[in-house]
Amino acid sequence: MKAVLCTRLGGPDDLEVADLPAPTPRPGEVVVAVKAAALNFSDTLLITGKYQIKPELPFSPCGEFAGVADQIGGGVTHVQPGDRVAGFCGFGAACERIAVDAARLVKLPDSLDFDRAAGIPVTYGTSLYALKDRSRLKKDETLVVLGASGGAGLSAVEVGKLMGARVIACASSDEKLALAHKHGADDLVNYAQEDLRQALRRLTGERGVDIVYDPVGIAYAEPTLRCMAWGGRFAVVGFAGGEIPRFPANIILLKNCDVVGVNFGGWVNREPDRYRANLSTLMSWCAGGRISAHVDAVFPLEGIEQAMRLMTGRKAKGKLILRPKGEN
Ligand SMILES: NC(=O)c1ccc[n+]([C@@H]2O[C@H](COP(=O)([O-])OP(=O)(O)OC[C@H]3O[C@@H](n4cnc5c(N)ncnc54)[C@H](OP(=O)(O)O)[C@@H]3O)[C@@H](O)[C@H]2O)c1
Image 1: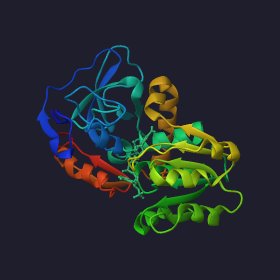
Image 2 (image 1 turned 135 degrees about the vertical axis):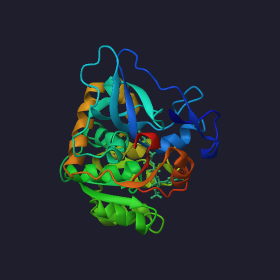
Image 3 (image 1 turned 90 degrees about the horizontal axis):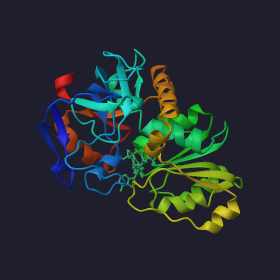
Image 4 (image 1 turned 120 degrees about the horizontal axis):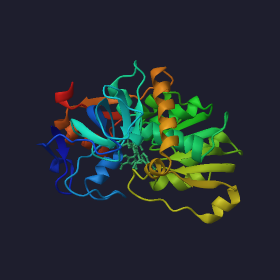
């Protein structure tokens, strides 16, 4: 089978497409014929050795996928051969077949296509976990989403809207903001042009912001924290901007707010049943048209270098999908 391989740490141009023996399932595992795998920003870090998880070389990137269950290992009861499934695997899905822990898989509604399903587990999974389980978002609260047109950001716009929030989307261009608006954002802030703190004051007045969803970090985190409402929740999701923000503890005290960490992968390992429940909800929301799982572009496995460059160049909008050729 064909697989994208990272054989040495480096950039997207160091990745290779290689022929590997097809995997067989161990007890508790399922081998899935991958129809679509999705890229995340974390893949661009994983291949350079700068991500929190450091897989042994060689490894295949892509932490989420959708496909058809093929071979079933001993002890697996909730998946049968031929089932259409999707799941989160951390890394390893940029290939034609993957052996994966059955606890990571959910079945897909018949009407949901593989491309959109593949892009749901990490970004939407993180956003639902961040907004429902970690930040306890309530209807009519105000949610600020930074990097609102990226994979994680756009999913937070949609999930927040579905949960009844007023969503303020923040991004670096009007084109990106137009996409966030199309996906449900109520108010828009171009932080490349307008001072973020002043814009949030203008939009939320004395009350401030109830929830912040931050996958970007850098210079946007602190001004946003300074706009929190009494009892607000600031969800730390990621650092796509490259710098890890520091928070002044006095602002957290004065605002009487919570800064909540969101470690989706760690949570999946600890609470697989709740992860599967959330993921099944998201799959049925997508099949029912309540979330979009917007696909920006589809590439063959050989196109992974180009896809990763879109991400590192701050040009990806929504999800980038890889489709193994042999399987479609
Ligand atoms: N905590 C978790 O469990 C979890 C789960 C999923 C993702 N994440 C993290 O969330 C972050 C976003 O992931 P993603 O897959 O949504 O990425 P993405 O699709 O590439 O989006 C990232 C967004 O960040 C902004 N950005 C600012 N500076 C950037 C830079 N130098 N390079 C790239 N983007 C930059 C961009 O928006 P603007 O141009 O509008 O600023 C971009 O749309 C990553 O750090 C990822 O590791 C964490």
